[in-house]
Length: 234
Image (cartoon, rainbow, N blue to C red; front, top):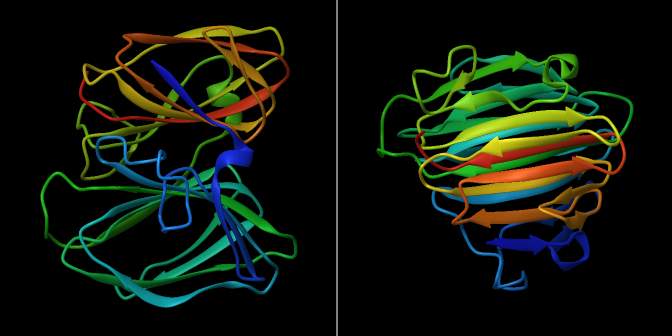
């Protein structure tokens, strides 16, 4: 089953310094049909203006993955961590029993990123933060696991949720078949380009909730960048 969430159907917010689109409903004004998908509860497409950012604020019992699409993100938190995360990099933060952090546009151009929130498998625990670059050339023609809650996924950033974040790049005309975990539940977003998912067209920035299928067939109509969360164990 494929439930498309077209760009124009997504909820939105505009604070001046922040322009956001919500793949999952986070306010009463958002599309009520865009509910959570297993542990996946938030997927925001954020654009942060030069000089803008989120001031120091707190989180508890949530796994937050940040996928930077354009620009430079600055991070600091109450663990003493400081980071500079660039396009192609991924950041993960396990809030655990509580953490405070600030995130801001550290560059001279608009910052575009995905903020993805997942429910942890167990509440509490010590907060953690990490980041890692993932060159897009390594993802050419295939999905690569970028962050994972499963120990067997070596090289991926660790999270404490039953989910994986995957990324891929496809050239125009290229096709891939991606098997899903036993949960048969995933959410796919077209970060750039145009694709077909099992023959259904998807434009740039569209999303699709995928359920009750063992695998997904994807064909690129033009050069495309894809980001997907698979919510379950293999």
